[in-house]
Image (cartoon, rainbow, N blue to C red):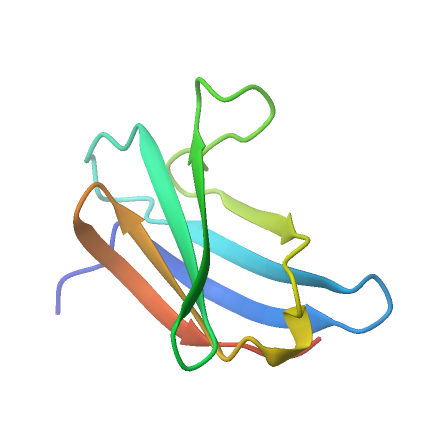
Length: 100
């Protein structure tokens, strides 16, 4: 089985902060260059999308072997069911959102 370049380790809704939290884990073995990651949140339809790149200030992409948690202030965050992560047009992973 191919080791994914980036996988969603955790996706959850924090009822105290009202944020959606997504933890990404970057493969320690894959040497693929990623300059941007896009997060797409879904209820029954795509609700919101956020891009993250190393040129966007404080939104950095995890280095090889690193894990990083991102915090999103979505509209109606408690209604979101899943999140997908893309690099360019390639879907890297998808995960259902649970309560933190």
